[in-house]
Image (tube, each protein chain N blue to C red):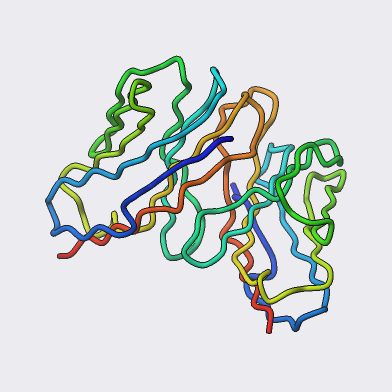
Length: 114
Length: 115
């Protein structure tokens, strides 16, 4: 049973560019959340998707946007990249119905902005 | 506002020693959930435990144990007889109502277990 998978694992962009990160949730899961983890810090909540809609959002600017597809997979888009966007981006999934409160995390996409 | 504080940035112990990782939280919610996650070098966060605010019973799972005290807003994690494989960054996290996945994470404690 595959867990949460993310792609790409590493990528390098320059300031001002745009990036798309992808996530496939664990089998049977229907909600996806995205987190940003800067070096040496704890993960920070970006947003959560459920039923193809953004349900909750953290304190991130509109440059950060997302999408959830009918198969529950998700994308995170970041526009006009800044140096400060360099971080590990973690995707997490769960099954909302019968929620056990456990979020399953992927290994992340490490973004470097030069 | 919700906040999680992990004051210990890094801890080093020798194998077989016991070690306790501290977590202090702040919230105005009466119902909330507390978590511990382990992050090995691969980057993936591994779930260890969830506790809700109404259950202060301590829990033991093998070499791991957790002490939840609402009176001091603490949720500490103890590893007994530590092993090299326990080396990782450990995060404490807090969330509100069930079904919300907006977790507030602490800054983590890096545990190094030396052989």
